[in-house]
Image: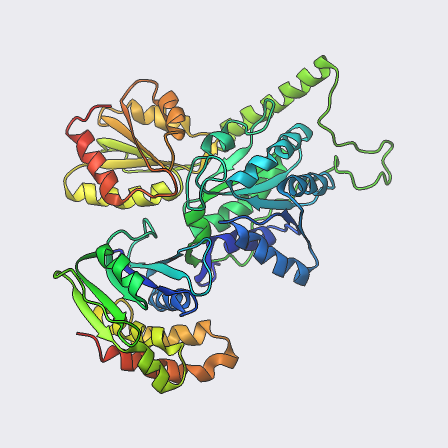
Length: 179
Length: 358
């Protein structure tokens, strides 16, 4: 796997940056090279936020992604903006609980998953992005469920470990939407 | 023994590295994209009993650095381009007074307030002076979060060794990105005696004085000669670079920091197309690795150089001086906060391979 790249995008406050970091942590657990690069600057809650995650078996060149393997969007403006950033054959994943979207490209795989509904059902809105990571993992194999679980135990402080089963549940529910 | 790799942001790693190098004094003023350095310091200095001051301006911060350095302490300040411009007067005074200090510049796009995205437009300012007078700073350009750590520790050693300002020149990409970093169990801290420091007269016959003012031209010229002698030693002993693939390269890329990372992947792509490309990555921008570039230019297999930067072409002047007309030097640069894509650089390589015009 060389320079496998994922863009995560949505509104500030939806947990985009944290989800990207968890994807990177899971891949790091597998001994991969990883980079995480946020959009930064005059941004605020309710504004747009995105981050780029690169996973590779070799040292990573640019952490800024021009051709993404996967784009994960939690709002419509992001889907409109980043659809064009996908490689031919790339995967666009959207949270269909929040918005409807019709891709203009025909050379990509399009996955609509009700991530926010899954999260609501599980009683924690933070699980929306986690379910989308489940879909990412199952669809592409860029990191495994086991690595994601191990990374959670490493990254979360012990007082938060009680949330891990819920996270994994969301992860598994999201994985069902892989094509 | 290296510890396991943890995912950390470049700016935070700079601060952590400074603490590990024994720095207990930080003075700064916030500016994107380096503010995480001071944020990290604000949190940690309280815990370990160090000094953290958010000054009222960059000018104040650099003069606090001057004061702490004059007292013999390891001291750090950090900023980004417009803030570094404000610090130049103080950096010149630090050079004149021969004080050890580490200054971090996480470069953003200019000129003026410019933008907040990554750039390398401060190369001239960093390597050719920046402030007034005949002086140099050692300028170090890390290319990864791991190097930000190792070279920041090294910067403190070099500052103390030569009693001068060492600048870490990063950019918004390096500062903002997270990458794995493995910290050492024990840091290679070099301890230098500082008998010149203003620590109170104590048992000394005379009190120490730290100053950069020498009114008598002969005295000042002698002082200038001392500085130049010191810089000559540094140019001889402290040049650092990474070079690879030179032995059979047709084209040699020169690039530092972020541009070298992107170029490295292009070299792999070019090889798949049968074009042999090597690279010389200056790690110290001053002292500049002129000799390896000059020697490489003399190699018969090398047909041309391609300099890649996040500016309109600054380091290329030093590359051309070193190449000294032996081979053509081409350029590819992006400005305004944009990064070159691998494809752009590859296209340029193909153009040169096919005999492109300089």
